Length: 312
Image (cartoon, rainbow, N blue to C red):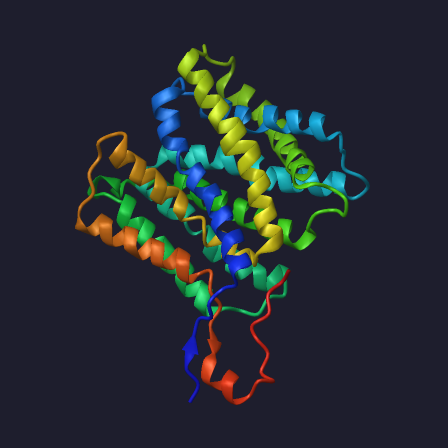
């Protein structure tokens, strides 16, 4: 009888995964930066500054424009990964308690696992699907509170739609890849610019004139735009290109986990035994999700059995 056991990833694979994992960790700082440094009531403006200036700067530095079909693809990927994702996420955050919004958004890896089968023709993976669900449960244990029982249909739809938008964007990014001869920085500049241009009219309609900006706010916007925007997306899109897309998606729960941890370290929040259990479950889900199970005994007995294939 075959025994399933996850193989150890190669050193190069582990290094790429660790570097890519820094991105959702950086995104987890957004809540603290927003609440402590930025003017309140202008989430769309923060999203706009996170995307458009960084995209235009990178575009000016690389001097590389899309060609042919990539004008449309860059627009679609920019809207799905950035332009549509941010507004939906902020609508969910405004209409739902933070714990519910974060938990619903953590369903993104589950959606990616399903989309990878449909769009990338990947073999269904019960292993990664199970750990994707475990990640949602872990995030829920960390961020949900008794006061998080409020239910708002629009907020729930926005949270699930934001997760679906990002999931589809990540999957299509994997499917279409990156054009030959185009650097990761140039590629990220296309998507950030496209997402920022989409956000520009949305921000003007939703919030009107921009807020007054002081010194701390400038630092906050620089962090979100340069580190959480340009640098993060360069690493993120490179990770999607080099790693299985479901593995990358399963790194997503690190974002709410880092946000909760910073809430403890910076904002003086506390965590009980249930939240600590959620931390452990989420970290286990993120780690195990990077592995692909195989039949170790069958592989030893029959070396001709192929390993699990992933869409590269």
